[in-house]
Amino acid sequence: MGTKLNIYNLKIARDFRGIRQSELAKVLNFSSVSKLSKIENGLKIPTAKDLDLILKTLNFNIDFLKINFNSEIRNDFKYRSRKIGSVTKNEIEANLHISLNIIDRLINDEIDISTFNFKKYINDPINKSLDIKEIAHFFRSQMQINTLHEKELIYKIEQLGIIVLETEYSKTEDARKLKVDGTCAVTLSEIPVIFIRKYASNDRKKFTLAHELGHIVLHSFKINNRYSEKEMEEQANEFASEFLLPSNIVAQDLKFLNLTKLEMLKAKYGVSMGAILYKAKKLNSITENQHKYLIIEMSRKGWLREEPARTNLFLDSPGIMKDILKHYYNVLEYSDEDLSKKVNLNVKDFKQLKSIMFESGNILRIVK
Image (tube, rainbow, N blue to C red; front, side, top):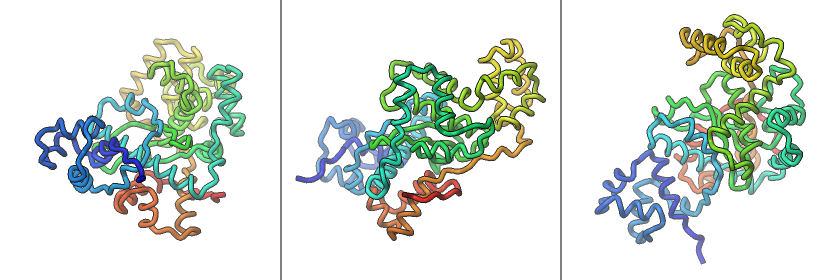
């Protein structure tokens, strides 16, 4: 008996191409968009001829329908990108789903999967019912972070068994303009992945990394799903704030803030002025009126869009996926053609996703 085809993957294929349902139905000469909609949603079994036509039009082969795309992608990606068009959203989500499948396929067959057993770190703080600040301190301790300005944050997150990817999300112009700093996901094999925007400043990347780590710790693996998206966003922000700026260390510094002092603290802590201001408000180090005034002043200077970069804030680069690809190319002697077949994509799509998702960063580590 042959492998079951996942017809729902047709929508992911269409989204990956950035094509609306109505546009594809027209190209296919279907009598109505209803036919394509019912096929994509599993309400109508496509004929072999229709299926072949759809796949050829989208330039996917039949093996793409054998992929199981049950990865868990955080809904906050949608929550924080409401202002972009639905086609762009769907295209980016398709890129994420396909990338997560690539990660699973490349790791499961050749790499020791126990390296990515992140769940072992969650049990202790969750079982002890620690609050969010205590959980943030627990992970600082686990990751041996003893300074405020941690320069190897990505390396230490990856040491937990979390894959970090710097990404453009998509090659399309709309997607490249997208200001979604990051999102996170858990693959079908329960490997957590953090995506961060490649062209964001390092201070923004640091808060995004901590924010998404908070989501993975607090909300992934079916943990605490009772909260609303807004509540989970606030919890992830609280985790990130305490993780990067422990209250017991920074409280004294956050009194009597002004823009000059915010710039100075940005250089000292290695995080954005916005993150410092958020922390000061949480600790009641400044009044509501002071907070509003500083926000207005930052807005007037254009610093809410782009903060002054007077200090070169160093941040390391992702290494795991670069190492895994290096392992396939140099040790196992795979070509791009071999890898594309392995992950059920054509060569052009594989190379494009590799460029968008996996080739950022410059620190290589040995794959065990």
